[in-house]
Image 1 (tube, one colour):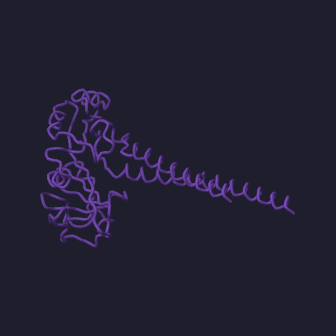
Image 2 (image 1 turned 90 degrees about the vertical axis):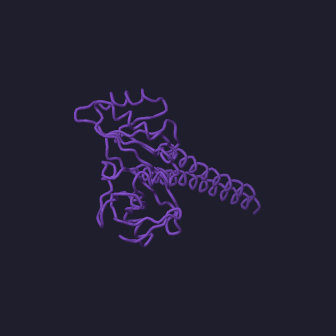
Image 3 (image 1 turned 180 degrees about the horizontal axis):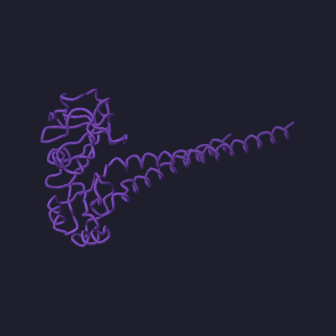
Length: 255
C-alpha cells in the first residue's frame, strides 16, 4: 500500500512539474506577444508625415530625446531638404486617462497636418488644443470645452482621428505650448525632415549626421521608437515567467 502511495505521489509531482513548465512557457509566449503588441502600438504613436526623423543619439525613447531647436535651421540649409518640422513629444496623466500623449508642431506644418480634424478646426495658435477621438471620449470633452494641463487652460478647437489608438488618446498643440508643457525651453524631441523630389535619402542622412555626432537619423518608414521598449517588456515577460516556474517548483518540492 505504501509503495502505491509513493508511486502516486511521484506521478502527481511529475504531472504538476509538467504543468508548471507548460504554464511557464505559455506565460513567456503570451506575455512576449503582449509586449510586442504594446511596443508596436507605442512605436506607431508618433505619426510621421515626412521622409526622415531626427532624434537624440542613444536616447532611450523619443520622450527623453532632447535636441537644440536651432539645429533645425542648419538642416534647412541642406540643398535636398524641402522642410524641417520641429516637434515635441511628451505625456501627462489625467484621472480619466493616465497616458495622455502631447504632440507639439508648428501650425500649418506637414507634421501638424497628420492629425486629421473631423470636428472643429486645426490648432492655429497658443492656448489651443485638438484632442484625439479616444481622448475626447475618455475625458468627456468636446469642441469649445476647456482642458487644463498643468493648471493652464487650453481651449479644445478640434477633434482628430488618425486610426492609431495611442495617438488618438492624446492631443496636439503648437510647438511653443508643447515646450512649456514638457519643460523643454528651446529644446525639441525630434525633427521631421521632408526631402525634395528625387533626393537621395541616404545622402541627406549622411549629411545631417555629419553636422552633429549626437543625432540619429532614420527614414520615416524604417523608424522604430519601440525597439528598446520591446526589449524591456520582453525581459519583464521572461522575469514574470521565471518567477512563476520557481514558485511552482518550490511548492511541488515541499508537497
